[in-house]
Image (cartoon, rainbow, N blue to C red):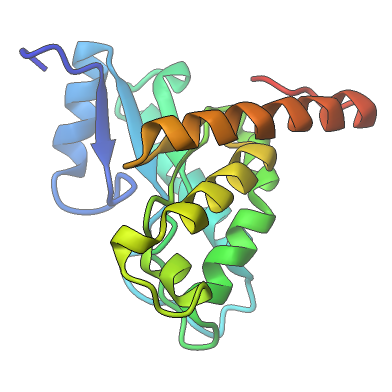
Length: 185
């Protein structure tokens, strides 16, 4: 924080190690807090699908952050692509479902951040390619995320992702105008 950071990233969704300290630091400093959807352990048999479990995890994290004094307008949410485990469904299927239904997270009226850059599930989708050969897959997935409501993209490939996101956002805005949905928070 002393070096000028304006966002703290908590990969455990305000549920794991250091959660209280990170929330306290965000509240005291007034910086933004990025919380990833996270379940402490694998849950199977709950009957909930991927987006329902992500939504539930984020709801709990948002409430925890607010109770720790973090202003709601300072919270950024992340669906935790690549971090959920479920014995009933593959990681590839889980992540593609969450991306397809990402718009569901807009109900929180908070910025949505997605980190897809070179993820292993993308490599699996395109035949087992290594991380350095996943640019096209990453760009495509990021475009879908933006189209489906993401506001922030974490990426390794800034220029390619930025240009693809500009196109996806322009198309998304036309879709939301047509459907009467609000494009921005």
